Image (cartoon, rainbow, N blue to C red; front, side):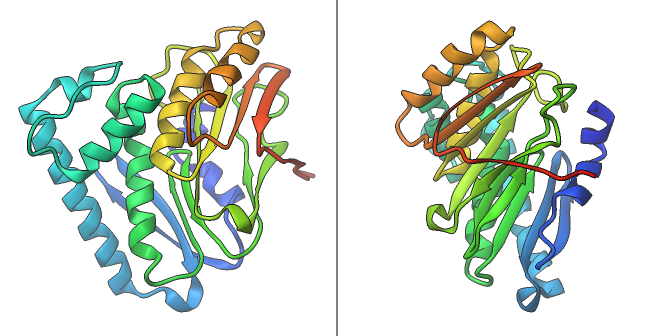
Length: 251
């Protein structure tokens, strides 16, 4: 499953058929982006790449000057002159009680999504399982949960009324991202993808066994801005808030 995630082969199973997709890769940033077909143009890819390059340059420069921003597993205060991307990440991290880098994927997806909103009424930006969605129709987001029997069998319904929304997933058994825990999936919804990403990390950090699911969900529900959480470990799950689960037909 880790190889499946690293090669991003899961993307082919979860793309909206009504959209045109393109991919933006720069160093560790690997985005799958879906927009209205009529809105797509090669020049738009260039604009996204320019934004990603600027965000990365700003963040890398700040980290060079303040390495603790990269290494800390707890919130850190911002230094004078911090770029906007660092401010977004630090704010989400402070709310969730985690390190700033726990919000990086969601923050990048969110900022790219904001750019694309000027060109397309439908925007989906996925960054390593962390997703920013703006949509005028209901959509399903599939849940990848390692070796759990729920993996690729469940989806979370995203209603058009809650758009734009971030829906981010952390895992201790799937993908390359660091987690203190062993959750198969810790999924969080929030209006800001940066916040959803940071809180998903916090949820995942709290899950070692099935007995930890309830407390992990309780942690998330206390954070302002979180609208829903789903936690999975083996054959058990716990959920709170605006989480509507749908069965996927993989036959």
